[in-house]
Amino acid sequence: MKTLVAPEIEAYAQAQSMPESDAARALREETQRTMAYAQMLVGPLEGAFLKMVTQLVGARRVLEIGMFTGYSALCFAEALPDDGRVITCEIDETSAALGRKYFANSPHGRKIEIRLGPALETMRELTGPFDLIFIDADKVNYLNYYRRALDLLSPAGVILVDNVLWDGDVLKQPPPDEKTAAIQELNRTVANDPRVTAVLVTIRDGVLTIRKKAGV
Image 1 (spheres, one colour):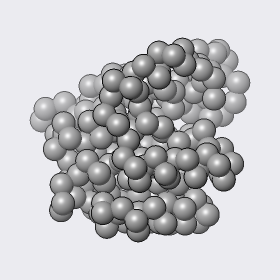
Image 2 (cartoon, one colour):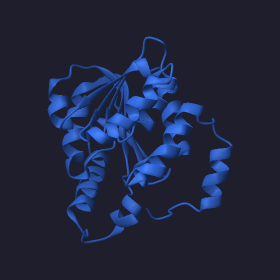
Image 3 (cartoon, helix red, strand yellow):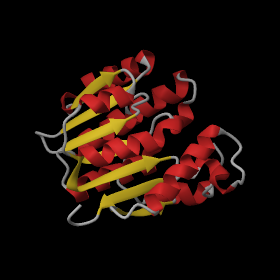
Image 4 (cartoon, one colour):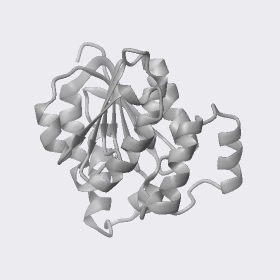
């Protein structure tokens, strides 16, 4: 992943934000030691942002599309009340197994339910409403995830979509590959969707923050 924000600035921002828990730090460190594509972790700064949004929304039900090793799922769970619930979708059993180990050792792990399999199939089977939906899975399906997420979102809920700057490749025309094209299409669609308001936050690789308009 390219450095879109100067490392010293990101380190400063992280130091001024809520700290990661011991469980989250241990999960992050093992992921970085043992897993390929460890850069897919959201990391401490974005994790703090996810926790803050969870608290601001007053979420009780969170849906995560793309768990990887469970760092973000654990962040959501830590921010939820005791009766809160995270449903997280993952297609890779090896990644899910690492997450399970750390969920089992956290008092918040009981709030997390892993659904293995293609996320779109899982989403079709779910019943809303969800107060917060985080999309961070295969990029070519981003628009499909967004459309289904809108159906599942509570009236005052928020959708967060990760990696919407895509190492800065969203600026390239024509797009260099189908993943970039899919992210560009999602960003255009959301910006022009009359049902929602949105802001693209330049944390890490970009987080598109979306909320339904009143009455939708």
